[in-house]
Structure formats: C-alpha cells, structure tokens
Amino acid sequence: MTTTVAELVASHPLLVGLPGDAVAEVAGCARNVAFAPEELLFVEGGPADTLYLVRRGRVAIEVHAPERGPIVIETVGPGGTVGWSWLVPPYRWQFDARAIGPVGAIAVDAACLRAKADADDALGHKLVSRVAAVLLERLQATRIRLLDLYGTHSDR
Image (cartoon, rainbow, N blue to C red):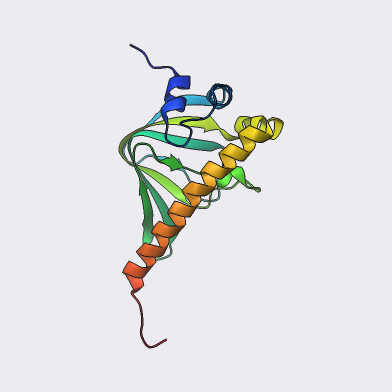
C-alpha cells in the first residue's frame, strides 16, 4: 500500500490535528525527498526555501566554528522538523543541516507555504504557533547544552 504525501503530512507531529483543508494546503506544497549519509540538506547563508519534516533517519543541525569545523548543536530524528529560517525575511539559513545516515523527509516548498499562510490567516497562525513551539524546544536544548559545555561558575 502506497502512502500519499497528504497522509504523510497529516501524520507528522508538527501538523497532526490540523483541520483537513489545512493539511491539504500544506500537502499541496510538499514532496517526498531522500538524503544520503553526510549529504547537506542546506548550508548557512543559502536561500531558506524549504521546511523539512523528518520521517526517518537523523539530521544534525550544525554551526561552523573557525579552526574547529562544524559543531553539532542539535540532532533531529523522525517526527522532527528541520528549518525555520524560511519563515522570517531575509529567508537565509542560519545553520547547516547534514544527514546522519540515510534520511527520508517531506520537503515543503517555503514560498508556496508562505503564500498559502498569507492567504489563510488561520493556517498562518497555526503554522507560526507550531513552529514557535519547535523554536522554543531548540532554544531550551541549546541552553542545556551550553550549561553542559561551560558549566556554572560560582565566581560570578
């Protein structure tokens, strides 16, 4: 049995529970994609043109540090979301994203999704609210990682 893109979109945690018409709107902008191990989904500074809904595999969100190379700041697995820079001008990636092993995802075209969100305030609000929740989770995870790296200093 073949699963449609609309069914995959409807079952992804970021979008689960959206009304049927909203799922159809998002699915109309989406396609199935695959990445080979070590393949970059996107590169810092490049045009942020896609929202990735991870279905299988893991994706490393990286920042490049001079003289150290890439530093993984987050790893996203199945059910996770990669890429939010498509939502805010100037629509440029702020990080790199690299496949750790084979990755399967739904790629949602950002220009298409923004146009549909602009045309439907309810859809736009739901998307922004859900992406904001992902951002908050990532910010909290980064905070914990920084505390692990640098610890707390009692001399401050």
